[in-house]
Length: 247
Image (cartoon, rainbow, N blue to C red; front, side, top):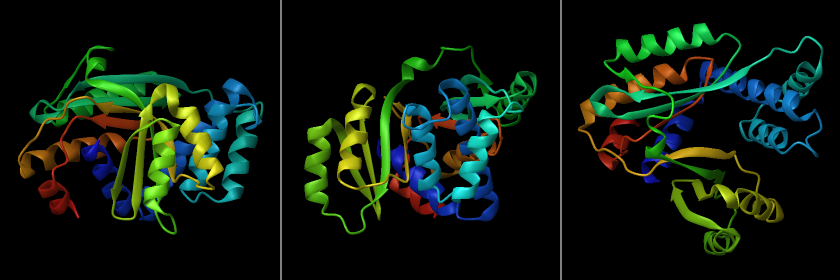
């Protein structure tokens, strides 16, 4: 887990720029739209929508933006998005799994194939790399003002498998089945996650030298910059040396 949370922390630090924040908002709005179309516009009865709105707030999305996205999602002119995923090997044999929400599958396929080819990767068939990743619940929140010893015990009681602190950020990981109980416990403790959801965590990681790893991360960032791609997961080990080189 350490590699995943370190990369997430670095991305959050880099993501302070307006352009990056705009892309984050675009991805969250698409999630709100598809969640509302799938289960209705009431977050009290739609768990996926409730989670999308929670992540919007965690990303400091203005309330007006959230309300506009909800109106857009439940209106007659709402866009229709299709959920799909792509798997393959990036540079130096690093496994990459991309989750997408797209309104034009042909465009998305062409863009992803082009990115893999440009960076020396190979796009695989659907399901070919699923064995390398476990679907886990992941929550991140600030440790400011919290007693970490007490919080850790509460999280473990709720079903957390891993509890990690990196700087000011706490990352809690749990089994997919315990996502609801951990989310409920955080709510009871008055903790609003900056981000939460089911994520694909590599069950084994691959270590590369810093220069090779940077090439892989450049490829991953090129995928993340695509508006059709919601999440990108990989099994590159985020070593302390690499983390320092990126900060």
